[in-house]
Image: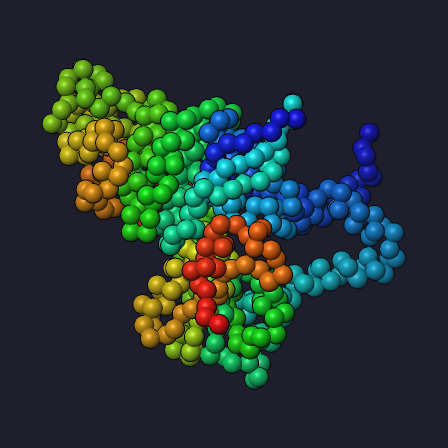
Length: 246
Length: 199
């Protein structure tokens, strides 16, 4: 049996057997691992509030050869979403992050960049400050997973698109110019493209100083990034639909 | 070869669907039912059928009841102007056990959970919001989880919109009685410190 101790993010828990919880954990050293937290439903002694989704923990778990599920031994809280007020928008944003990570990351694939992105985003998702961190996270996830198309040129004619609207369609690769736009395409105006480019160059803390809301260029970038994610994941994300309705 | 006869396997499978019942417990229960008298087995099956046929939700508080309004809502000895909001009907039992609560309840039947498709419109709040004018205080007794906190925040906001002067409080969180501070997690302990009271 091998014991691991690593930083991790709790993605989700499910009731398992009589008093146990099945835990999906995004660890820094081993990627996504699933395991059983024994008696976690009956006793809060060992895990306390550390099993709340999107809690950043220092996890200790044991792994047996040829077994898919690890044994969760103890979690020490590094940061908890409960350390700040929670409203519906914030819980929707946190569940969106968890859903994206749960769907996009294959099990046992180490993704240190994604881990650092998640930790950086988590603490910035606050009441009244959800849209910028969520959009930043979504756009960066598309890039880190290798799904973000080149925004600077039309995929059909290679024409430079700087300063022009960029057209994208949910069912097709790449972006196009207005001439080669595909059926059902949506335009990303130049200010939204510029914002996306800023997001890919600057840290989140700096972007949070910019005015943001749930509409305008920020919403357009978010919709663009969510559509890329959903196209590559081949499913619609429930929490993304909730966020869109807020 | 099948491990159990078909009727036994079917009963085990049905029992296994119950919360907190794993395969072993389901087998134990199934064998207990098999060993019990026909009268007992019939009484159990009748009780289950009767439960489904006669129980419904109280039109005032959403508690599970066989009479409407429920025994708590129609009790003349209870303060009908103090309302404690809980997530599930089972939470009522936990609060009643304290023997310190003499108000009434309101059951939401869930908490806000976008990933599980539970939004504000899925919570059973209409009958609570409709009787705010008859209420002196609303006490939110929801679980101290992310979803419970979001639900408390939403309810407080909606109640303040409809009845700005109505006090909305929530139960305290802190170190459980009889436990050891050493075992309390960081969040619980920091909340306990934040909400300390003078002696």
